[in-house]
Each structure stands twice: as C-alpha cells, then as structure tokens.
Amino acid sequence: MDQISAKEMILPLVVIDVHEKVASNPDYTITMQDIKNWEKRNGSIPKGAFVAMRTDWCRRWPSMEAMQNKDANGTAHYPGWSLEVVKYLYEDRQITASGHETTDTDPGIATSKDDYSLETYILKQNHYQIEFLKNLDEVPEIGTLIVVAFPKPKGGSGFPARAFAILP
Image (cartoon, rainbow, N blue to C red; front, side, top):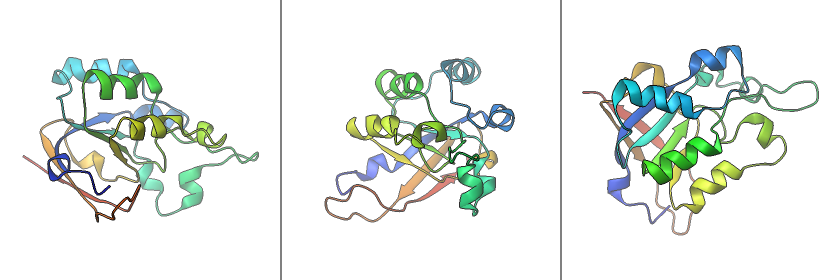
C-alpha cells in the first residue's frame, strides 16, 4: 500500500449498474454484455479509471449475516466479478482500480470454497480494489471523480479506506 501513488488515488469513476439483475439473482456475476452495454451508452471505459460495480448490496449493511446471505449449508450467496470482465478491464481498458459493495471481489459461491482467484488476480497485476463501497446509486455512470484515501503502512497489503466521489 505504501507504493500506491497519489495519482492513483484520484481517478475518473465508472459505475456499472447491475443492481436490478442482482435483485433477482444474488449469485449474479457481472458479464461482458454488461460492460458492452455500458460502453454502448457511454463510450469506452477510460484508461486509468476506477470501475465500481453497483449492486445495491450495501443496503444490507451493517448486518454481516445479510451481507454474507448464507444458505442452510453455509454457502454464501452474493454477487461478484467475473474473470473475463476483470481481465478485460485491467488488460484491455487499463483501469487503475476497481470496487464493489460486497465483502469480496469474488462472488459468494466462490469464497465459500476459499476461492479468491479474482482478488488474487487483481493484486498480482499490481492494482488495488476497494470493498464495502456504498452510495453508488447517488452518482452517475460516468463524469465523477473518486478520491480514495488510506494510511500508508510500510509493506502493508490492506487497510481500511475512505472513498468519496466528487460530482460534476
């Protein structure tokens, strides 16, 4: 974390809204079609952007039981990213960071199996991601800046962050 520069902390914010799909399927993972639909409306996702997935899952906070949404077998059911989308965003669109309202980058079904491969992929690409975002329903899909601030513990791999949007 101490190697993240200030220019990586103030970024154009892109919000991909999948909250209606999540409302009918808590296991929803964002798809390339979601991205293509967003780019059809707004143009290409800008290089260096912070891409946030809006699911409205944050409305379940502060109940960790509701956030995890576990079934009788202990399997969590909450939305997440897909590898295809994460690779596209980081490799093709060259975004700087991503975020979401859930507790993990990976969907609940995956994390219930100790599969954190999407989060691992992002971090191995030398990028960061923010969990537990909220109020994404209050910002437009594009045209906003996000400011992400956190302490700089030497050699730290994670820490609570404070993120806020600056509206046009």
